[in-house]
Image (cartoon, rainbow, N blue to C red; front, side):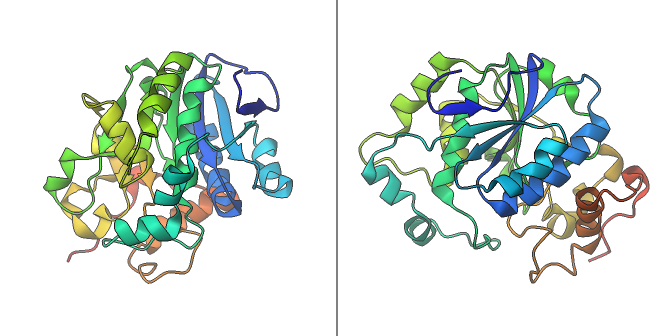
Length: 280
């Protein structure tokens, strides 16, 4: 293991699902994600949780109980100018989120810790944001090349030109990490959507996964014709989170109830039989 990472125990598999937890809220999200992975993984792969030092031990304990391998991560050694440009207030002012509401606990600079997965001691990784749920097996993605991700589709077909970094495949390699660090923090660097914008620039020929491998929750009401429960493998709660009270909660109630069932360890419905979005 390289500098900047402190694992709680050795790796138990050459393959790992990896997520990132930077605060108590994302630890809560990760608990539901881990339960969904344990229901669907067929390869006995590791579940690795990268976490920053600001996450309390009590918030991480449920993840350990679910079998996660914890790896504490330092923030990236970026310059003061880079840090200032990507601080929450500055970034949200210069690149406002106009389609949805980012929660108060959103800390954009922390997102770049995701890049440290290229330092991990695994051969193959599937990264999943902590606000996702795995509804059907995705272990076949371990056999996919680097770098595969789904498009950032949630409003219109024009979204297909952008990738979403909530789910992607990777091959950890210290050389790749060093190349990333060389490119990430250059004079005047500003990555509008933090790690997402950077990864699309670093992997310009990214391989496209089906939207069903990273189905964004806004598709439910913006593109209901695209929603197909039998095909959805990963559900992603972008913008507002299912553990929050928020203005769109009534419209997303079925999705939120599904997340709560995972978070609470309740009976999980057969998602392939769930009703689709209501008629507009």
